[in-house]
Length: 241
Image 1 (spheres, helix red, strand yellow):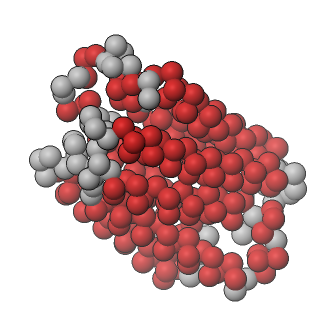
Image 2: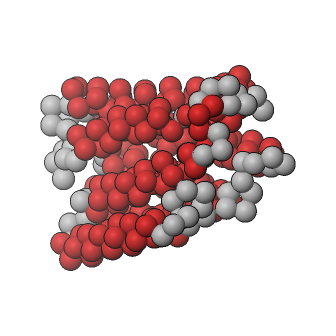
Image 3: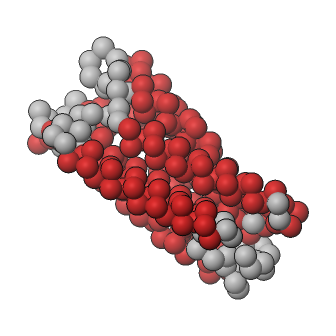
């Protein structure tokens, strides 16, 4: 795969991320009473666009045979795993916090707060160990973070089943967000762990292509579900929760 092919692969994802952030902004502007926590979600989507823009330096350098960003060649920054390792922690913490806020049981919310705090602290300790932040894509932060996030989504679903909201899911924005986030993490987490055994170095071009296609599929599901949710929920006055 060359730089041109990579750009063809990645452009739809970048466009979807932008459309999702714009759709979120449209939702906030159009809806008279946006669902609580929606502003934080939209701000996070714009932050994600920024992160993706900065993180693109590594694949652009790799697929251009280092005609671009040649200064990173043979440095610890040749791989952008360090950048996304930091963002991964932020991502898991944000969405765990987002879904736990829709849990009415204060005790459960407190448990998730303690678990999230422990996850952040242990992740900082893990990455303070030399060699773990740079060039070590297989790490426990992805697995623990994914388990923490999926636990919050499952508790969120359980509460939906026990409430009248189950009859109003069509206009309940967090439900659309949960579908995209759940599918994304169930798809991406395994391939991320596999990347610890098959890196993007020479001889693993097939894995590089697989890696890109899995991420493309997961991102398509993630952001399409976000966009659909924002557009549908912006057509009707939101009920408070």
